[in-house]
Amino acid sequence: MKQVEDSEILAMFAVEKTRNEAFNLLLKKYQQKIYWHIRRLVLNHDDCDDLLQEVFVKVWKNLEKFRSDSQLYTWIYRIATNESITFLNKQKQRNNTPLDEVSSELADNLVASSYFNGDKLELKLQKAILTLPEKQRIIFNMKYFDDMKYEEISEVLGTSVGALKASFHIAAKKIEAIITNDEIDY
Image (cartoon, rainbow, N blue to C red; front, side, top):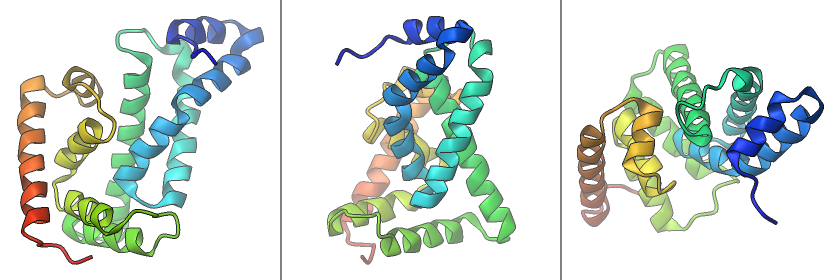
């Protein structure tokens, strides 16, 4: 089946009669990508499902106002990223927990999750990623897993391409050191 262009989805969404169909096409096109983007940030399937729903509610409510200054999917990624960061910050505040303890809690949840089906190396990689500062973790996930271009990540995060490249390089080196030095138990 041919994938519908974003411009077609936006044109259909602008017409009341085809709005629901347009939104369903948008969901089919982006829901899985956004799910995995959020999931890599919050790690918990149930939290991810809740956030995914919130993201697409925001998309629905604001799609008419979308100005096409950026690509549609980077706009959706920005919403998903912001919602995920807000969720993690609320979780940190609610528990009055430092970020490194939140990362440890996320790692414990990952191991206990019935939805995690990776092998030991995948678990080790995920735990290594959790040792990164929040922004580095987001950049690493978007580049490594989502294979986004630096220019696209720049649009989503509002950070310069040069800073993103440096951050990704540092993150990759940290992860490589952790994995090769066997610093994480799994």
